Image (cartoon, rainbow, N blue to C red):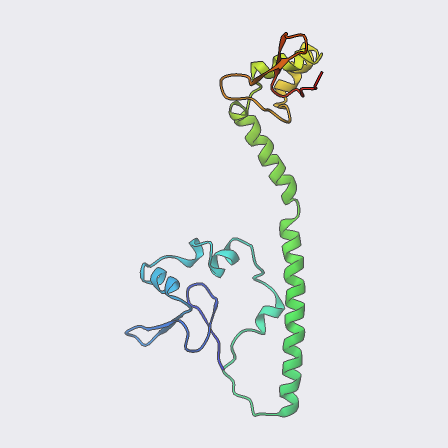
Length: 199
């Protein structure tokens, strides 16, 4: 059973699956699915579409120069059937696939080295350039922190570092207030995030 490769995306095109287009000059184009066939008819370049193997190779995301890739090349030289040779070939195919997977893992690790540092640098740059979009501390939250005994300099430092209180139980526009009725009949107003203990 011969498994062809898709002309457009280089995926395997299995027998009785996909589409075969034969041009007037006799050249055959095998496609794994209608998506590839439609893109071919629209005359799109596979190297510019991110989901194709051609793009991945052109962008340096896959191995292009390796000795294990040469074994997959088709050879049109017929060989006489030999049982021992066939067994050797099958063993060699397994070994070659193991070696290729190992080399692809090493290639991926080298390619992704330093990715976390790059992502952090990009995130820091984004925060610096768009700091005006970060959430600000409300005036009621500042007052609450001041009532708790925090110094004004500390509150300003928290605001500059964009550190917000962990839990906010505020209603938009107003601070949620609760009333506490004491045993002597007096009424106390308590901020919404403080616990009401029974007296």
